[in-house]
Amino acid sequence: MDNQTLLLVDDELSILRSYARDLQAENYTVTTASDGEQAIQALRAGTFNIVITDLVMPGTGGMHVLREAKNRYPEICVVVLTGYGDMSSAVEALRLGADDYLLKPLDTDELLIRLAQLRRKQEKRQQTKAHLNSLTVCSHCNQVRNDNEVSGLWQWMHWQRYLTHKTGVSLRLSCCPDCIEKNLRTERTLP
Image (cartoon, rainbow, N blue to C red; front, top):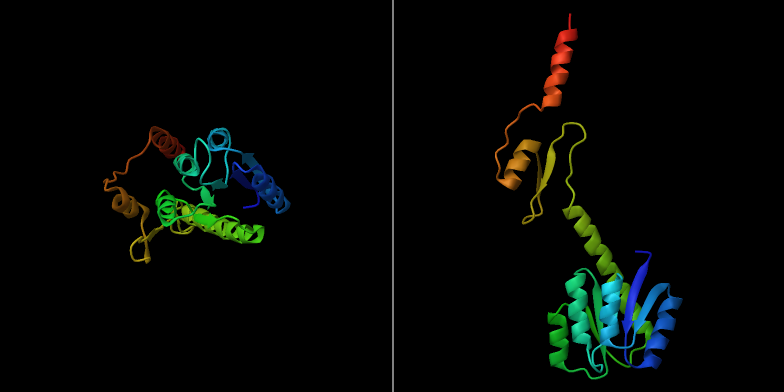
């Protein structure tokens, strides 16, 4: 994940500028928003790998930013920062899908460590998703590997059996008009 795009949201401009500068120095592409409404507009206008949002802001707060980010991009990582942390807000943020919940003031080094952990988590999710959306087929006999999601075991089976097993649909073999025509031409040229 070379291109890390990050949306940073905080109503305290000194914090916003400081974190933005430090994150850009670590090769993050940073977009800033000084309130929740600007953050939501940014989410609607662009795509981000990570959102770091303050929890308590005038107007639209961090929980709303979190909800909007996760609704638009379920794979996005969201970090909630707050200077007013309590157990109920932490539970609520995690229930809504926050990937981390951190108390301010937060050292930049600690934030970078947490972001590195989130990047690894995103990479693993993408690898898993790529694996789940692929089908392994033997290049010699065309059998399909059937991965058992429950046991983690797999077996090789004929592609027709695999499709019937996965879809529940019975397969009927036939010939398309092009193949029929091709076969007729081949038969006419045989001695």
